[in-house]
Image 1: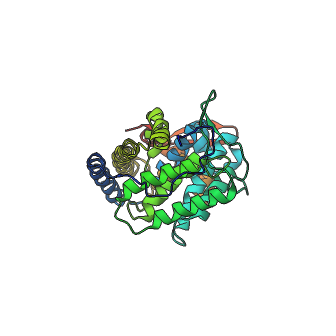
Image 2: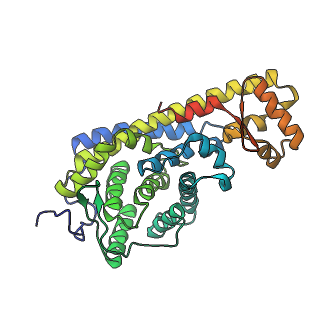
Image 3: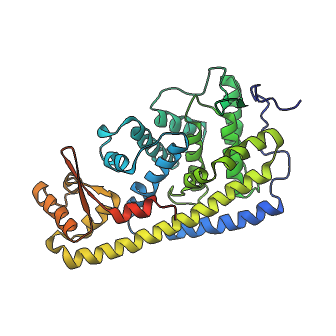
Length: 358
């Protein structure tokens, strides 16, 4: 029977695919991707304060992954709300929920392997919902004009396919781990288990998979930038696997995404380290009593810094904290910006590194 876009894909096959996946071209690209990812893992370990990556690179990943789903927020809104979600607008809150889901998934790996329950937990945090596996019928993926794909229907069917996917993730086979990640990502998106948030959940699962397989120590791979820049190829690749079993081109696409983003993320970390060193030296030379290692690191953890953050870290009490931040501004390390009653001190040099693709 030929594939019918309008019929629920309840015949979605179990993994692994019943064709050769690790072709010569795939293996060649997997070598390059594995090398780049290994170098990123090693280089990330050299950063003295990992929290800088948490509030920097990971927050950008959250923003861009959400942007793929047309949930758009500005860097100003995002970083202002990063330490105070109460001031966030609805789109910014969704991005912050993505970050929360990513880190909850990361911490859960210390307690249990990736599982269907992990998928559900991630989805529920992203959507701030108690909903679980999709039960409704009639779900269709469209481009606004025509149906492109109809995912499986029926909660039992979907749960069965997710259980098969979980078994594949943990199967003791000889498939290259990055090739396997590409297969897992396709299958999750094809199952489309939730009423919303499947793309974001699937991209978090990608990162958690890399951590679980010890290919990364912390979830810092910046995949969404590549997908945005190559969005047409991403969706065409998924569709061609479904309709034509075109696994080779899909897997190569994902391996190139890993290689490219690993190289870019390593470059970001290098630039952040260099900027940190320069900032430390400038603060030592010009900030007087305002200088401390703790404050210098804080303005990298919180690129939109405010007095409250210094108080919470016990760096200084309110009046002194305000003086310290003004001193850092006076020597060109920060720029103040008043928003309502709040004054933010912005690390523009760091923001520039974070938002640039390179």
